[in-house]
Every structure is written in structure tokens, then in C-alpha cells.
Amino acid sequence: MEKTIIKDKLNRPLRDLRISVIDRCNFRCQYCMPADQFGPDFEFLPRSALLTYEEIERVAKLFVQLGVEKIRLTGGEPLLRRDLPTLVEKLSNIDGLADLALTTNGVLLPKLAQSLKDAGLKRVNVSLDSLDDGLFGKINGRGVGTGPVLEGIEAAKQAGLGVKLNMVVKRGLNDSEIIPMAEFCKNNGLELRYIEYMDVGSTNGWKMDDVVTKKQIYHLLKDHFELEPVDPAYYGEVAKLYRYKDKDVNVGFITSVSESFCSSCTRARLSANGQIFTCLFNGNGHDIRNFMRNGATDEQLAERITAIWNGRNDRYSDERTAETNKNRKKIEMSYIGG
Ligand code: SAM
Ligand code: SF4
Ligand code: SF4
Image (cartoon, rainbow, N blue to C red; front, side):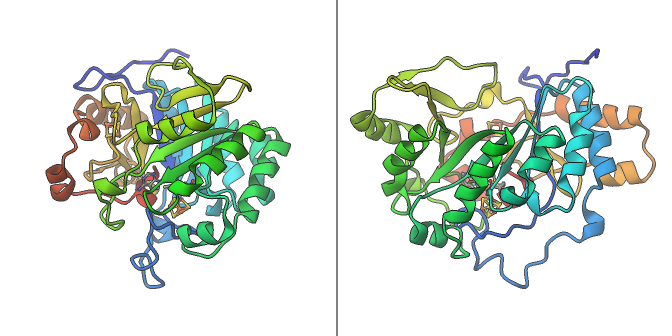
């Protein structure tokens, strides 16, 4: 398929699209949807506000024509969206799309992994922040132990999906789990990515002191394992990867805070209610849902996406300071989807 390559103001092409399919979640992770802020009265998006699968497919096709090669489904918890394999099937049939992945807390994978794989999903990233049941239950705010997530990981493997693990590290909360998680993943042939705790949204009370940096985690790992660096697989690869010298398993870091990577950020985000965001930290979304529902043609939609991307100059992590963190209008991770 002939693709039109579009660039933003900092000369970055559009390559990746993250689609949030739902803003709800069955967890209340402290760093993402703290239970005291996302309580029983919290107003989530009504169903009519969510993009339908047909609408998502239409927008995704246009994004692919404009250069997108990888799509990741996320949320909220994407597996809570009804009939998700139907959407996966539509997306996996898009001509010119090289990769289709999903980020999930894993709890519903035993039920859905096989049908997602059959529908064309290639990979899942499962989030797991601790192997200790008590601590994990505290972090996820729902008292759920690690069992359901571990079963989800196993189900994904059995179904033939690629599986990687995400672990957000917050100082004083789960830094004691850095080595146990590394051991578990190494032994089970799973790539683990340590994610630096980020100042997304305004509900998690983020402080710089809470961040355990890649450098700190790396030094800790070096005391236990022998590691060698792995070259990035492609332009815009977000994780900094290493390999265990005695086993062909990678371990990586998402260094959003300590070593920002805005200069190669090729990622657009589509929220569940059809707003396009050009940065995880830019709270100004661009509506595409109403435009579509008011009868915009494909050509007009493509023009709008192009104009949004051409106007992009976000580089929040490069510019992050205590002041920018305080003064910025930001959106919640559960809304825009990490
Ligand atoms: N519910 C799914 C899950 O947890 O995997 C998908 C959505 S979640 C918002 C996507 C990713 O963002 C997860 O790996 C999660 O751990 C991560 N995340 C959420 N809040 C974060 C924060 N404040 N800092 C860093 N990563 C965060
Ligand atoms: Fe839910 Fe994922 Fe956020 Fe946890 S990180 S609250 S599982 S959306
Ligand atoms: Fe991309 Fe914004 Fe993150 Fe920088 S801060 S890497 S521009 S999403």
C-alpha cells in the first residue's frame, strides 16, 4: 500500500497509534486511577460517547495511510470492552499495518486470549507490579492477588501471543520487587520492562522523589545479573534494552522521566471518545468523533489528522521541570491509555 509520510514540526514522522477503547477499569492502581478519586460516583464516559468499532476502524485505516505501522489497544482496561476480538479482527485486516498489540492488566486474558489471537492480535504487554499478593492487592486498589494475572500470562502464552511484562516502579512502594520480578521473568523467558513512574494526570500526587530511575534499577540489577546492551530494533523504539548474558532473554527500561526520548516520539493517541492527542502530557485533544458523525468524508478526516500532526511540537519530557509539572493541564492515563 502506498503511504503518505507526514511529519510534525520537529520532523518526527507518524508511525504509532495507541487507541484507548474504554476509560473504565476493574483495577484502581494507585499511580493511575487512585480509588479515592475514581470512586463509585465517578462519571465515566457514557456508551454513546465511545467510538464504535466501525468508527475506530475507519480512523485507524486513515492513520495507516498516513504512515502508522503499529497499533496498540489500551484503556482503561481494554478487555472490559465488549466483543474486543471483533475490533481486533477489523484492525488486523488493515492493509499496511505491520503490528497490532494490546496492553492489559491480564485478568481477563484466560477468557479472551485465544479469541484475540484468532482474530489477529500479535502481542500483549501485561502489567504486573509485584509478585507479592498482599502488595499487589494494595497497588491495584482492589485487593486482587497475583493469581489471576499469572493465569492471564499463561493463557496468552498458550494461545501463541507474544508476551512482555510492564512494571511501574514507585519508590517505597514496590522497589523491593525489582529483583524478584527480574528473576521471575528471566526464569520464564519473559521480557520485563521497568517503567519509571510518571507525572501523568493530576490525581496520583506524583513527586520526583517517588521516581526510581533507570540508572538506579540498572545498578541494582548489575549486582545480581550480567547484562549486555541490545541495539534498538527500530527508529523510535521506546525501551532501552539489555540481555542476560547467560540466557537469551531481554530486560528493558522505559525512561520517560530520567532520559526522555521526545526527539524520536512518533506516537499519536486516540481516546475512547474520539479525541486525538499528540502527547501523553498535552491535555488538548482534537475532536475527530463529532467531525466524523457530522458527515466528514475520508478525505476531510485525513486532512484533519494531517493538520494536527503537522502542527505538533510537543516534547514535554524533554522540558519537564517542577514548574511545568505543576502548571500544565494534563489528562489522566486511564483516559488516554499510557
Ligand atoms: N489497564 C491496562 C494496563 O494496566 O496494562 C492498560 C492501560 S494502562 C493506563 C497502560 C500502562 O500504563 C500500564 O502498563 C500501566 O502500568 C502504565 N501506567 C499507568 N499509570 C502510570 C504512571 N503514572 N506512570 C507510569 N506508567 C503508568
Ligand atoms: Fe487500570 Fe491499567 Fe490504570 Fe491499573 S494501570 S488502573 S489496570 S488502567
Ligand atoms: Fe512523546 Fe510527549 Fe512522551 Fe515526549 S513527552 S515522548 S512527545 S508522549
